[in-house]
Image (tube, rainbow, N blue to C red; front, side, top):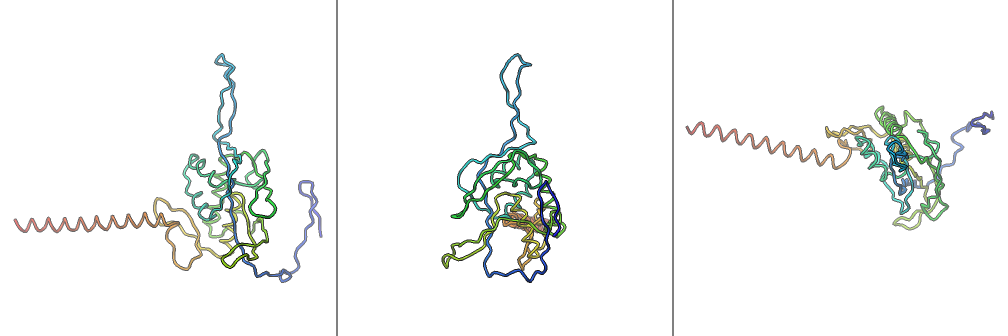
Length: 271
């Protein structure tokens, strides 16, 4: 084994001799994407109004830097593919600020993009030991949009994780999961940030050979992935419903115009 140094920490490199040495387990794997209750808002920058002849401190906000703070409350579990679609649907910074509280934390400490002011909290997701979650308290808005472009490019190329890597590490816990058959042993993969859940969808899409699609609704056109056997045209049922309504209205209008045309021809013949 050959040691190398990274950030003054000695690490030993070792290659697994043969993949068959790994031991398979016949256990189900569940994913659990947690949204931690938080509050997102622009960073406040205090400005003294001395120029106006007053010592009053007037707060100013840097709209390009966001800060996040836990608010307490119950954790929620979300579908990471649905959250990814909602993330892709954002149009501007105002949409982003409304979306982030639903997602919870955006990323963990040490992930790209680099944030500032490291914060640590304990998250109790089950009866086991709590998860230690470290995250940056401040992030630049431009960096969040940059992450979205990276994720979109990975999907657009048809190779999930192409821009980020062929693998990603996640928290995994061997526990008992409650099912209809009672308590069953299971492996649970847990994410506590949006970026983690996005990487999880990319990894699963890649492993399962998911096909890349573009939503057929013209004013949506969001990229999505599908592993189902039938050909999906829309990213969600809402888009399919909208297009169905539009198609029905178009058909009725065509029939109405056709009837008006026949009536007009009938009146001419009567004359």
